[in-house]
Length: 112
Image (cartoon, rainbow, N blue to C red):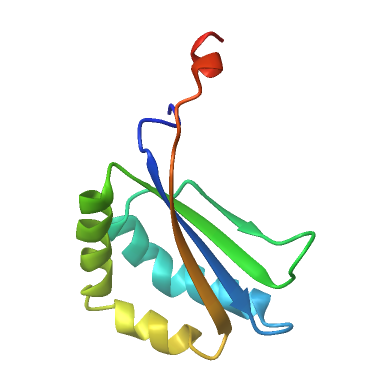
């Protein structure tokens, strides 16, 4: 997939409580992933911090535009099973940061 094919990225960073990353990952995979795959589609990827701020879980989701983002997020937020994930993960997440980042075209990439 060309990076411009879905030019809007939801870049989420969750800071997880100390020594709770394994529990968070299990809860996220078991409760959130089925909902997210159904409502948001396939993710760009999942990462944990290695250098810099610790205990961070990063996930990226790609969208066509802001309207696509809003439509799919509404589907996620209104999914009947989503409150169960929120309740199960509330004590594990200490900070959540959400960024929407937009792809920029780099002409030099088109030449390769």
